[in-house]
Image 1 (cartoon, rainbow, N blue to C red):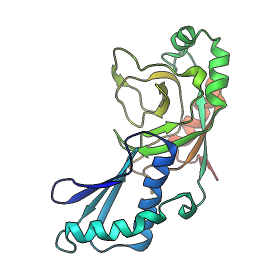
Image 2: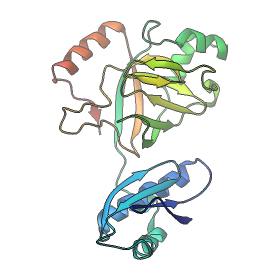
Image 3: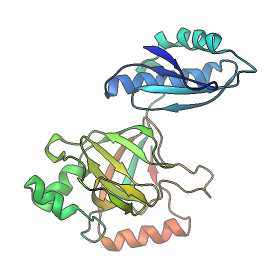
Length: 235
């Protein structure tokens, strides 16, 4: 582990070089401990795969003092301190019109489309962190059998709520944006809703599963989401 200055208003606490559940768990545990213990001067934190960026007010605490305060919490940063993870069920329509790459991905993997859908929706995914765009989750847990390198030529725009895979990761586009993931389907739920009391649906550490739905149910749920009468299944 090491501390690195990030400009004059933040410190990056790095836990390792690799992307792994173990390293990311320590990152999330340290963020939780800092929120609970409330070291002086901390303004905001941004977790990533393997590090935690801690913004601070230099008028309240100096760089060295902040690093010392955070270092005292690091030995406690483990699964044991984290609260139970939320489980979130997301409906997903694996439809050739919404899943822009569903058939191409199945062909590349030498799988029937139905088997690709079964494997993707049958897994449980862990949200490493939220980034790139507001509310976009970087998730691990994808079955080895359906891993694909990202698209050689990324799209200039992917529709919001598209569910994609690339490499060992799964993601859901939270807004219309460029992207290089293979799009298998689409969820009718909004990952980012700036008008909602809690604008970001998913959180780091969430356990996510996908429930396959047909196009009729997709349209029904989408209408309820638009009317703000739909409540996601979160435990």
